Image (cartoon, rainbow, N blue to C red; front, side, top):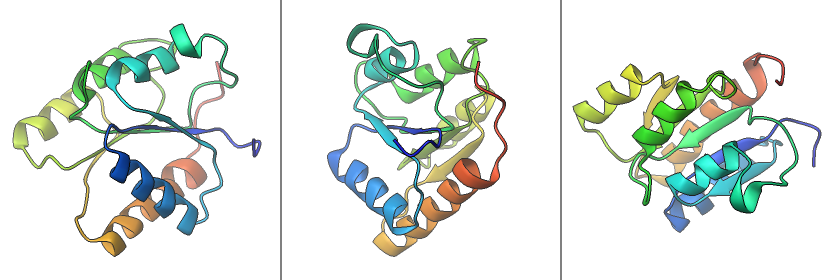
Amino acid sequence: MTGLRHILLAEDNANDVELTLAALKTNRVLNEVAVTRDGAETLDYLWRRNAYADRDGGNPVLMLLDLKMPKVDGLEVLRQVKSNEQLKSIPIVVLTSSREEQDVVASYDSGVNAYVVKPVDFHDFVNAVKMLGGFWAVVNEPPPPR
């Protein structure tokens, strides 16, 4: 553990997980990254239940959230997190392939901090993650852990 607050990556696509982790590493974002593969697992992680009942650490400094996930979709995860007093201050960036206007509007209506469409080109993706990681995990001043 680096001593930095961790990032939560909620993403079901293994290739996108690897690309995101590589992009964070390439851009020297040193925060530990926890990965969840569906919306139900993401909520279990955040609420420290089931397989995550004994996990260490407080809330993530940032959550990168895919919208199109199995079990519980990303919009429902977003709604539940932003309506919970203990979790609502976690910055959430939707990192998705969806350009659908209804997804963008629903995300902002539900309290997302930023909405980023995943670039197809690897170098563009690395640059997008660099900006996200640099701002949210390094520059942004989060509230103190609860």
